[in-house]
Length: 236
Image (cartoon, rainbow, N blue to C red; front, side, top):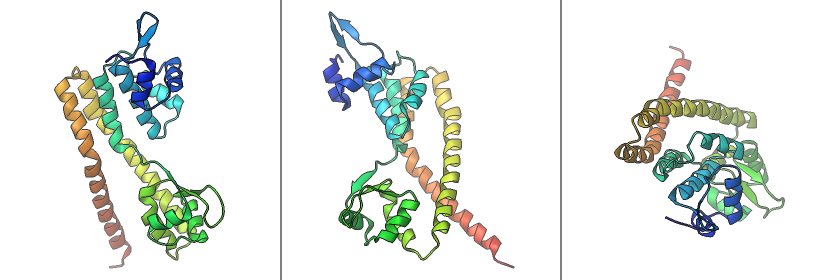
């Protein structure tokens, strides 16, 4: 693959200015020169796609730079594709800006100002403009429906906020621990073993299947834990 900077930017879905900015920050290796024309290959495209995946995870540019410093500039496109495969199944959904009519349709119910205020306190939505038709940014579209149901319950707002914070705190710690286990027991042995192509394909396939299985396991385990907690709270 030999691409000019314009072709590389088009394939990666970014601007030429962005490509040059990343190259200036050391996120991309220098191109191969043919005369005065710089030519980019599959490894440049794979590295750009990895940068976009890291951005989708919410990482700052400084954090992305630190992450890429651990990946040699001459790393082949296949290794960069593996990095993306390990990240992309867990990449969060993107926020959406909706007007109030579309917000009600997505939530499956009418959301009055009080309910939207409760959703805002929970971090599910952010107000962009005021008024009955004002736009609202939905931070997590997948959580909108269940969050609207919770916000409509006659519970104190402090109860809802404390519950959300508890779930976020424990799931964040769990995710960090599971990610470390995966790195120590799967990714590190793969690298130490010479990065065999067949092993790389196996890891990429496994990464795609891991997310739904882990989520199902987490939900089931949480249900059992809640059941145990309720039983312990009931007197003999």
